[in-house]
Structure formats: structure tokens, C-alpha cells
Image (cartoon, rainbow, N blue to C red; front, side, top):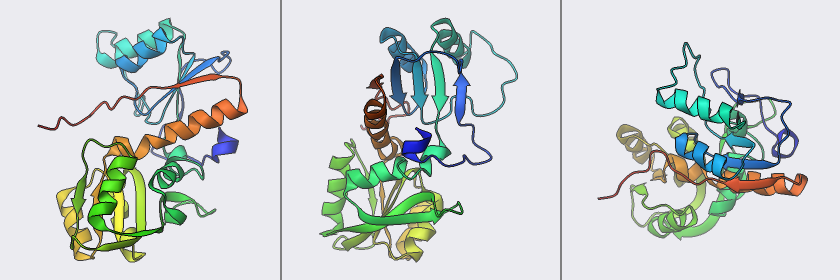
Length: 250
């Protein structure tokens, strides 16, 4: 995975890598998920999974105790008892050449994209910005919604007839890079977890925002990882599609 996806060094505050398990364990079946919870653990058990690869780290900060009656304690116990390994690729995958944002660009048909916010000396980092076929913003937003299979999206735009030619994007929570998108003259920025005043700032820069959600903008990478593992190994790979914080539209 490191070689093919071209994973990058994780951020200092991150906790990618082995979460629970044994590096010497034999692996036959892999399950991919964005988040780890008890439902995911049960699904893994039912499908005889040996390794779960989760994008978001289950263990993010140091544990001071493991209470087996707590939600996290029950999950840890279930994984250990069923010999299920848990591994995470978080910021290492966010910045990977063939990671989160490459998969998002492919889904959105964004061509010839460059990194939006560079972090590393090799030019890698977060997000991307590239060319799209000229489309009015409302139609472009509908295309994004359909491509990412969103139940809903939020669109903030200074002009409902705005022509989109250059699109910036970042999977997950990308509000930190709104300034980059505006500075690089994007017409629209697609990401998740955009707050009110952040959208307000974007509009002042004549930048439209499409908030397609944290889950929906990151989920496409799981399909890419599945294809990669299957191509380079004889392992069985399944994707567990579950949004642990899905909004209920009323």
C-alpha cells in the first residue's frame, strides 16, 4: 500500500498505523471502512475478516484505561477476541499521491489537477485544484451530488449563474484551505464540514462552496484501495459502507 498509494509521512498529531493487532498475523480477508465502530466490528466478524483498514484512527489519543463496559472497551475486546487486526491510514492517505484526493478528482472528473495546499518537500499535501468542463454552478452542484451519491449537499454561491471552469477540492474537513482555493482563482471549492462564517469568507472572495459532507468526499478512496489490493495480492477485500454521523433529513 505504501508503494502503490505513495503514502506520505503522517502529521505529528496523527496516529496512523497499527491500532490493534499483531504484525505477524496471516491475512486472508480485508475490510475497508472510513470509521470504526461496533457495527463495523460485527460485520467483520460475520465475514471472517482478518484485517480492518480504517481511514480515521480508532485510537487517536493515549489511553489511560480500558473499561470493557464502555463503548470503546467493548470494541477493543471484540477485535482481540476475534483475532481481527485494525490498521489506520489517515493523514498519510490524505496526502498520498493516489489517496483521498486522487479518488475524489476521478469521481468528479476534475482533470490536470495540482495540489491545493502543499505540505511536504515533494510538493504533496492536501486537496487539489484543476479544470472541469464549463458548467453553471447549479448544474455543477447537481453533478457533484450525483457523483458522490449524497443524500443532500449545501451550496453557497455569490451568483446562481456562475460559470465553473476551475474547481478546487479536498476530501473530509477542508475548511482550512478555502483561502488557497480563492487565491488560486478557483470558481468553486468542494469539501466537507464548512461552517457559516467560513462560507461567508469564501463568498466575499467570489468563491462558491459545495459542502458535500465529510463522509461522501472521502468514501471514494475505499474503492481505489480495494482495486489496488486485489490487483497486487490474492486477498479478498470487502468495503463496509457506513456513515457513523449520517444526517437525518426531515
